[in-house]
Image 1 (cartoon, rainbow, N blue to C red):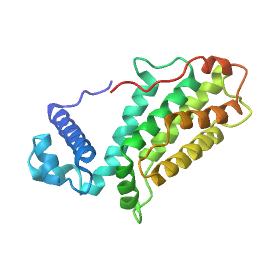
Image 2 (image 1 turned 120 degrees about the vertical axis):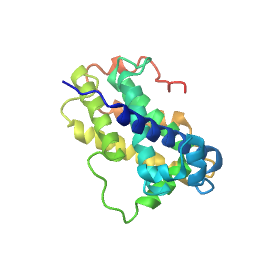
Image 3 (image 1 turned 135 degrees about the vertical axis):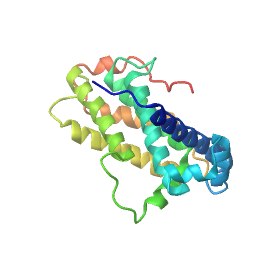
Image 4 (image 1 turned 45 degrees about the horizontal axis):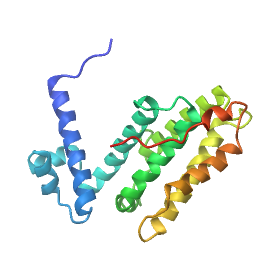
Length: 214
C-alpha cells in the first residue's frame, strides 16, 4: 500500500516547486547572471534562508531545473492529453519539444554545462539518464508496434537519436540567434528513423507531431 505524503512533506514539495518555477521565470526574463537568490525567494513567497534548505547554491538549482523539465517532457510524451498513439510520432514530438526547450533556454544550458565541469558524474536519477530512459522506452514501444525494425537494439537506436539531438544542440548554441528551424530538426529525425523503418512504419508517419501549447 502506497503511503500518502504527510502535510509537512506536501508543504516541502510545494515550496520546492515554487522555487523552481520562480527561478525559471526569472532566468528567462532577466537572465541567469542577473537573477539574485533574493529575487527567487521573493517571487516564490519564502524567506531567503529557505532557498538554501533546498539548494546549496544558485548553480545547483540548474540541475534540478533540468530534471524538472525532463519530468514535464516525459508527462507530455507518455500521458499528455493530445499524445499521439504512434510511438514513432511520440519520439518525434519528444525531440521537437526538447529542441524548442533548448532554443528558449540555451543560456541556461550553457550555465548548467559550465557548472557541471569538474563535478562528480551524474547519478542514475540525473536528467541525462532520464532523457535516455524516456527515449529508450519509446523506441522499445515502436519496435513492438513494428514501426522500427527489431534487428537493431533499442539501446543503439536510442544512442543514435541522442547523438543527432546533441549535434543539433551544438549547432543551436553556435548560432547567434538560436534560430535552427524546427523543420530542420524534424527532417533529421525523419531521415534517421526512415532508415530504421519496420513493417508498421507508415503508422508513425500519418501526422506531423505538434508541441503541446503551454
